Image 1: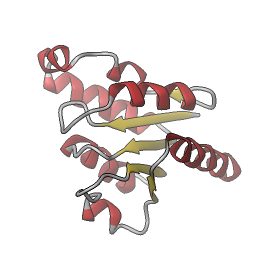
Image 2: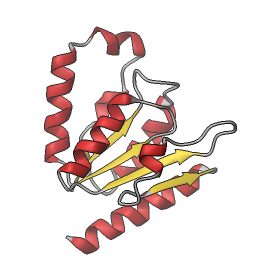
Image 3: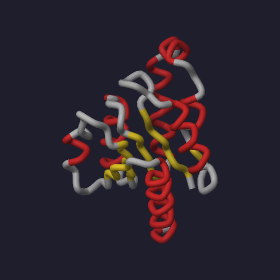
Image 4: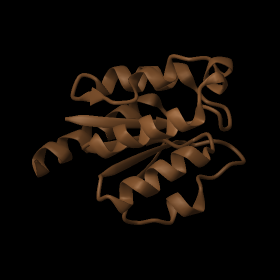
Amino acid sequence: MKIYFAGSIRGGEPDREWFQQLIQHIKQYAQVMTEHSFDYSYDDEIKKDDVWIYTTDIGWLRESNAVIAEVTAPSLGVGYEIAKAEEWGIPVLMLYRDSPNRAPSAMLNGNKNLPLITYNEKKEAIDAINEFIKELRRGA
């Protein structure tokens, strides 16, 4: 199984350490197509060629069996990836860390075809991933 993990890189407040923890957890069950995308600093990331990033990421997304997206930090790119996955019929799980004075994107939260799990504790996000992967395996 191949899973595309999406999370803010250039957008607001990326939490790379948490993303790495999620990726390590997902790797127990599947190949994470974007594993190395979160190894770079912001300064390294902005030096990369945008066309290369787009082409590479879209290729990985097309190859993936599912998408797990951490959507707490706003990101136009992550929203685009989620929309493409939905268009292509790729199952998506979105994770949103409950944040004071903030709400998840209405476009994501309002789409009842895609599950958006709000979590407070990291264990809740991990449990949601486990259940999502279990459902994917049932459908395979």
